[in-house]
Length: 177
Image (cartoon, rainbow, N blue to C red; front, side, top):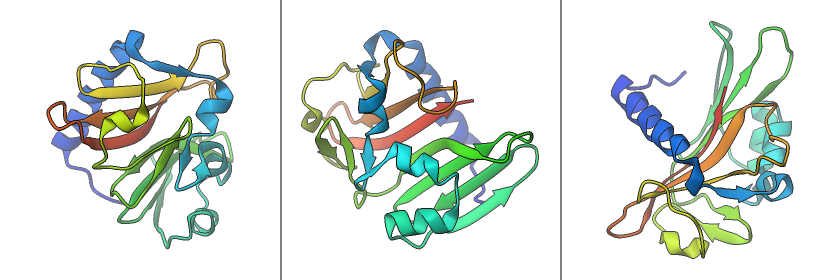
């Protein structure tokens, strides 16, 4: 399992927390629009259906992923490459896993949202009209009138950009458990 730098994890959690608190600036999508967000032409729903099976994900993405798994304190699977990291969590009383996060690590990975294609390093304006959070982030989430994609957990797609250059610097799907 990859070791995370405590400061990096703390910074990410602070960014996510501040973005979540500003939900009035979120871009709301229907369940179908959200579940059809694509990563390299693969829907979030298709990724979730693999339940974190590394072979299924490798075949789906045509990438040789590295894989790690732990059962303590929670059931956890991490599938990663130089371009993409996908984490799955499972409840000890359940036999299945679901996405807990997807992190885009390179510009080799394309993300499609509502028919708009973006990559790390692209201009945020490629997304067209959208609400901005905290001057440098865009959040896409399922509208309250739709079902949540991942059980009943709050989940959203977070896109962070440099407010001066408007280049996308981070793309991550977050599922708050």
